[in-house]
Image 1 (cartoon, rainbow, N blue to C red):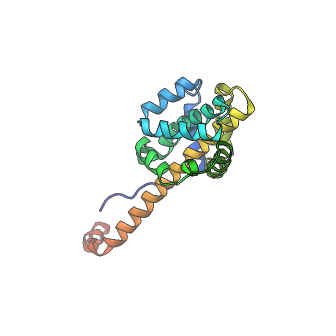
Image 2 (image 1 turned 60 degrees about the vertical axis):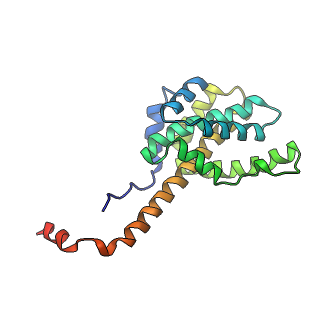
Image 3 (image 1 turned 135 degrees about the vertical axis):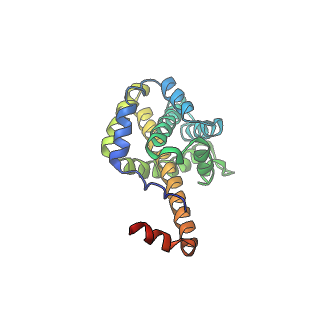
Length: 198
């Protein structure tokens, strides 16, 4: 039987990794390079860029801040969750969310309103999971790369959104592992295990 997966990271683990990454997260380019280092697939980058554009159709800098925050979030979650969270799994998880980006018959402003509500709700949950201390580090990153308050908020949303996706993936893996273990509980060699205790 395989070794069990580690549990979901605690807030302290996010904070530890954020501190380690702090010197690296200095510019949008450095955040994107770091995301590529942790296997950023083009599909995920395109999806979050599209989300940023949909949420901020009249402010390119704010939309880009969401995308850059997502890249920073990908690095943070990869470092915190380990090999269970990587770029292609994030792209697949994003596709599972059924966001309103493709709802037909809506104007640009209506679509922006709907999608922003969905993303902000998810981002807020993700930010709660990483904790206040890590959020303070993320705020420092946002000040380095975003020109105004709106862009800094969108950067935070990008990090939080990505953190929630990572938690969803990790939770699903834990659930699947538990189900698999439960199916094989009768196959376990209890006699051999008891013999090891002697």
